[in-house]
Image (tube, rainbow, N blue to C red; front, side, top):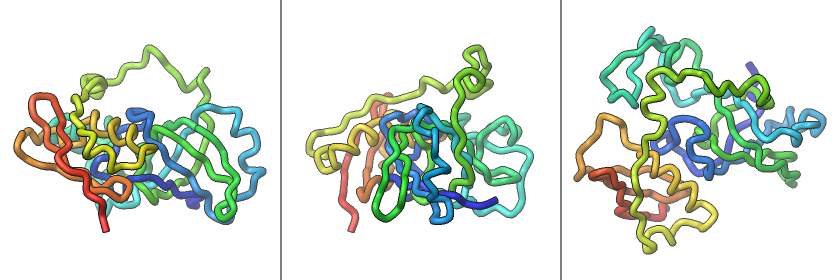
Length: 224
């Protein structure tokens, strides 16, 4: 398996990332190809598609042995499900699959053609194995059944984000951050309303707490 590209975005760590692709449509990322794959011919016709499939590697998962069952976070971290019934990163092969929207293709001076995408659930630096076009007439199945994951498809919290804190984040990154916060980044088994959580986003430490269905941002601090 050859790595053809890496993704660049505002998430250097996995905490805070959307749990699935497409959940936070405002979240922008850039795909930068490795030098061997910067041939413009390889992207001929790609601008005719609105969405793409990404095949990528869970490169931060340090696991030598695999388990037939895992504990999905959305089920509270205590219920076990078969690994092939989940999208857990702890798999026999650490391969991820994401559907993203292709926003634009840009010719750059240093990196050649790059892809600007939205809705990704990959952390910054994630290696990408392949890119395939999303085909609506075969890839979209409106009556598909989503198993236990369907129970949480509408989960979200209200976000209280003061102007004082929000204005510290660059304007073009604010909607993506709010979208991530609405998904409630906490592990599903954490319910302490006094506990303060934090994650890094675009060079900022964002701290928050959650109580009675409302997430309140406590602090946004620029990292050195």
